Image (cartoon, rainbow, N blue to C red):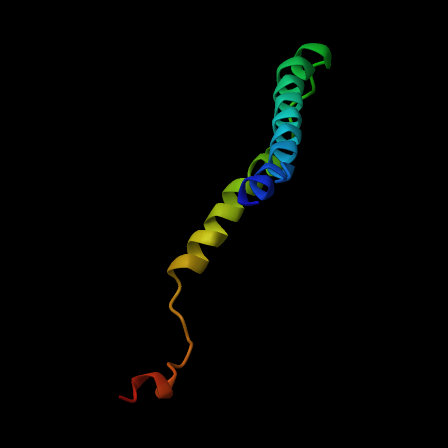
Length: 78
């Protein structure tokens, strides 16, 4: 009876794995083929190129700015 129950397992994980491999392979194929098919684009404006730099500076400032949170006094009670 235990042998019968082990044979009746569903393989839903394998189906999900096949779909994810299919999607990732189609994405990789599109990354390889689309630059060959599409026409070259003009370069973006300089201000648009600096947006990632501004985002990085903002995240750097937030990461190293001091926290103004008051410590929880209940956690210090022993």
